[in-house]
Amino acid sequence: MNLYMVSLGCAKNQVDSEMILGLLKKKMNIVEKPEDADLIVVNTCAFIEPARKEAIDTILLLSDYKKPNAKMVVCGCLAQRYKDEIAKLLPEVDRFITIDEYRDIAKIINDVISSDFKNNDALSPLNRVYTSPSYMTYVKISEGCLNRCAFCAIPLIRGNLVSRTIEDIKEEVELHVKEGVYEINLISQDTTKYGYDIYRELKLVDLLKELVSIEGDFKIRLLYLYPDIVTDELINFIKNNPKIMPYFDIPIQHSENLILEKMKRRGNREYLLNLFDKIKTLIPNAILRTTFIVGFPYEEEKDVDSMIDFINQVKFDRLGAFTFSLEEGTKACEYPNIISEDTKQKRYERLMEAQREISLKKNEALMGKILDDVFIIGYDEESYMYVARSYAYAPDEIDGCIYVAAKDELKLGQRIKVKVLDFDEYTLTGEEYVSK
Image 1 (spheres, helix red, strand yellow):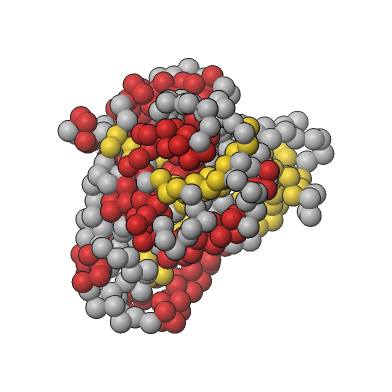
Image 2 (tube, helix red, strand yellow; image 1 turned 90 degrees about the vertical axis):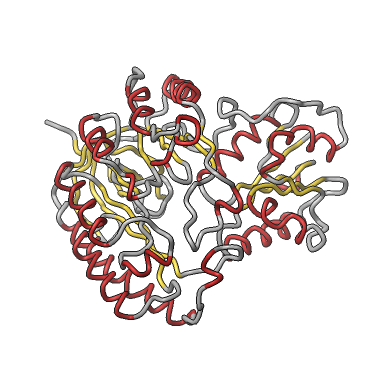
């Protein structure tokens, strides 16, 4: 029996998909074309409207490839949030599996395909079919979220925080290190809140202490840190432990106090400025990454002016922005929603133009510099150059990359030094540097 799977959305969804593949591979062959599949699985995202549209478009597209008697299963956030509403609208789907049903997913799929599949195993992070390159992986340390940001539907979909134990996570990371993985990316909805549900205190630093004790050649990247609990203890631990990449992914969503209050975000402008200044003072080579939402209710043009002033003060290395999307069931539904899509887009473009200038100057400052520990992630046939990343670039293709010329053939995951010879806003171009 053949299986074809598509995973949409974030890296956390990717980990779920890899566990589902790990569960099903015992009795199914994983194929690369949907038309060859007896079972098509689509793991969906439903965070914002464009994600929901992509999920539905993907389902409809794949349904055209279904061969006679093939089955289609849709799981993930779309199924969790809208199962009852879309079941009738998408008869092409044989079964919607909610996230709450994942504990029984093997039995459910067995019922759908009506075969001798007979797999009663549970999903396990130690049993995955990895879709990431061999040199890197994602480790999901918790599920759900205790925050209730006014714009965010994630807690409505994924529920409250559910952390894995330190021992469980360490076992997984040890497995990856033994397999030769170099870049371990720790992910969750709120990585800084890790462990609070089971230990009744913040345990991220305790987790990191256990992980850096593992012997081997690897680095850890932390993603999705909530600003008000990026503690001095955490900053200093990252500073003093070379196995932790000095990469601070801290989505703040806005800089202005009134908007932050309406967003139900903790902290204020002054706190955020002090936090980023503290990180850069203690760790000068730290990378600061954040996200903003523009066009949130109550935002005015003066707030955008002030937000641009804020980013010019901080000078983020990486900055992404989204135009506000109203999500049903969130607190923002109670707010006046009178900002037009055209106005949102103009504010977005103003913000990103300011960030482009910052990024350009930061990359210009790297001209002629030698970058250590750059690892190869691909090859660009058009430019005849290798594509690479360093600790300064997250693996989600948002941060940009480094293009590298080399005299000799390089391998995927190989780590080299690179001399920077050119740049634009989001990429560097250089050549492999070999010490004489």
